[in-house]
Every structure is written in structure tokens, then in C-alpha cells.
Image (cartoon, rainbow over all chains, first blue to last red; front, side):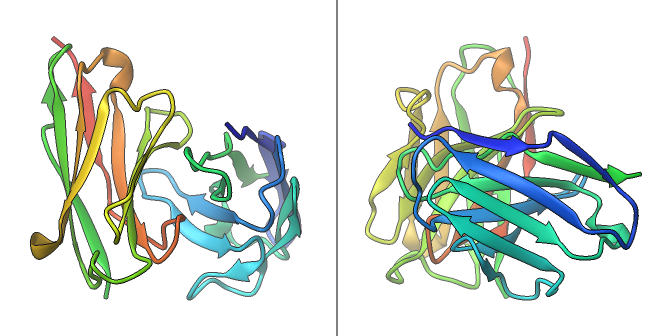
Length: 108
Length: 118
């Protein structure tokens, strides 16, 4: 079973700054990786799939990169609505389609 | 417009069986490539993937929970049902269903909180 790891656990960022979130897989997942955003009391929202393709309606300030075991989600200029928890999920080796533990992005 | 909605009991007793229904619109699970998943989230904790069923009626389960889970679909009703047996207080969580054209979920329901308590 693939284990997904995310770092840091919490990232404190000022509005307008760049945020870089990392996701690592215990073995290669090729480019079969998705990123989700979750705000308190809300369902997850798909941001990125295929490691780097933005989902419909996702602003261009969100970008994903990486392949194999190392992945990055970058938010180029944080807006107030971007403060949330971000999860990565692999869907290459299944079951299960494991999620990472999440990175909380909060206001510095 | 794609929508999904979870329904089921808010409270179950330990050892009981939980049955949750995901009712969706805007897509058909008979369309090639479409999938519906179940994911849960204990209060204050991370997402945990539980199960997935695809358009071809292939089913996939969490390795740690597979002996307790059953997923099924009723294409005519646009519904997916998840049952979880032998419920325990540690199963207290918000349960989400998600759908899309791949193994990840493009669309999500709002979730339903299930509390396990006697």
C-alpha cells in the first residue's frame, strides 16, 4: 500500500506571498496525483489532477508539478480565500487511493 | 450541473451496520469511465478513502476496512450505496461521496456526519 506524506503540516503565509506545499509518495505513482482544497465545514474541492492539470474553474495561481514520488502544489500569490487545508491523493496504485495527511495553510 | 448528496442515519449504535446512500445527478454511472467513491473524515482529522465503484461495476475497497465494506450501484436510480458492518465509535466521521470520470473525484457531496454511540 502506498503511503503519502505531506510537508509541512502547517504553513504560515502572508496574503500575497507564495506558498509551496510538498507531497511525497512511498513509491512511484507516475503522474497519477490529485490535489484538493478543503475549508472548514466544507467538502474537498478538486484543484489539480494528473499532477499538473488544473480542474475546471481553478484559478491560474494554483499550479502543480512533479512525477514519480515527489510533487509540489504552488499558490503563486495567496488570496484570503486560499487559507485552507490541502490534501494530495494518489490514484496510480490501487486499492486504496490513498490521501496524504494534509497541509494547513494559515495566515501569518 | 453535477450534484451529489449523501443520506443515511446520523446516529448508529456500536455493532450495528451503517447504510449510506449517494444520490447523484448530472452524470450516469453507466457511462464509460465514470466512478463514485466514498471518503470519510473523523472530526479534526484527515480524509480517508474507503471504496470506489466504476461504470463497469468493478469495486475497490480500503485494504484495512474491506472485510466490513460493501459498495453497490443502482444505475436506474443514480444511486450508490455503501454499507459498513460492525460500527464502532472510532468510525464516527463525516462521510462524503465523490464522483467523476477517473479514480479521483471531480465533484463531491456536502457530507453526512455519522456518530457511533450507544
